[in-house]
Length: 588
Ligand code: ARG
Image (cartoon, rainbow, N blue to C red; front, side, top):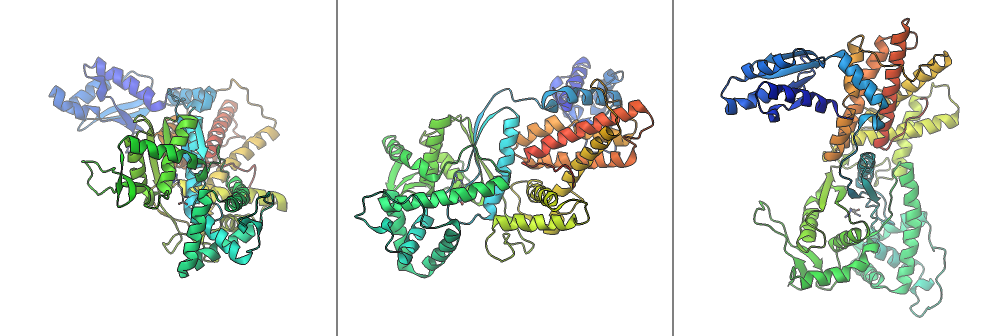
């Protein structure tokens, strides 16, 4: 089904041509003066150069052609050459009825199916999650769902960090505390125990301790670095410990991500890319792309057009060790081999922008991936606390996601204290609404911007917040339940009638943006566009709900039309929040 702007544009284009002008000027957009009209076309202004006529005169000619059209309630030419359009109620109602029947409520699937890998986890095993990981998960999940909805083949990858110094730190600390563990016995050649010698709670204590200590004690730090290198080189006991760390952490991470409504298709880790490194490095050398610089192997990635300095991409350190980017490059090789993607999207903190620029350039230059593959960096800003510094939880330490979820859920639960619900239901509802507060609070901001996590505002049931949106959906659900209770059955063929008043028109106008919103949200990797749509529609619906009798409308055809319209709003809102990774409760 065509988007409403496309439909209008086609009609306006035909009119331009009929008036003797090139149809390419007939671009229709949403009006930036909604008080004057709904849509506008500024094409006549741009035509003056080509046709040497006054824009207003040409705009008037186009408007004359469209005067009889049933699409418009009003179409006028305004000085100096704007065309202002307001569509007719009949046209809008027709569009609503078509949406109701169309698949995905009118969102067209993409013509070209892409294979997209989305890299949006980046959590590190054995290390606490921080706000960056939270944002990556929330934003990436929404983009993944949106791309899938548009019919693309999408692989969401957790890409866990499991190959860094944190492993060496834990091994070292463990060795200090329990030197007798078999993992440290170099002569041991039996089977290592299946059970890990630590729990997640132990790791949560060991890592911060070892990390802090290594910063105060140089010798300890070197020991940890050496242990990391030995683990990477394949020392058996250390690999066994690494495996335990991974298993214990991944089980914990799975739980957290599930609570967050984040669902990876793939749980790959940095370690999975390691086997691809030797061939990749050899290829870079053989191709003449890499050279030795002060003992290190590097690939130059600067380009003539650069306005700022882009340093070379280091592939191997002088001691032969690999780096964070060696792993990222090898992961590109791995993804190409496994999925042959047309696009890879990295949802990572924007402070890694330069780093990814280097990696992308290096990957293209050394031909480990084709020029035609779109490597995209979606950098996000920081989630700050009210003090303007990166958000911390109540104990002042790094963010513990469970605590954040718990705090928000408690807050929401408090606000629902007067509801007549049993405790279990209240807890379930509060969990859903709390998650909406966090995710919607994040997604409603443009991803690249920093934002302040404001507990009061995010959990408010009013304004542009997750709870308000959930509340609107719940309101529609209860309206429809009431309709059913009253024994009103609206036949399938009942149509939505042309609007009776402005509040109805506004609901329809908001709904009509659905298709174009989803397209734009994916094309621009901008979930906040879906949030804008949701908020506008919710607001329009709530005004409509307030101003009109729906279930009790004395006029039966109007009543049924309103019910159908409410159903459509409810259905579209539910799909829209699903694209954000949210689910509304049945009541709240
Ligand atoms: N593990 C990294 C971190 O915690 C993030 C990884 C981002 N993704 C990537 N492909 N480099 O900062």
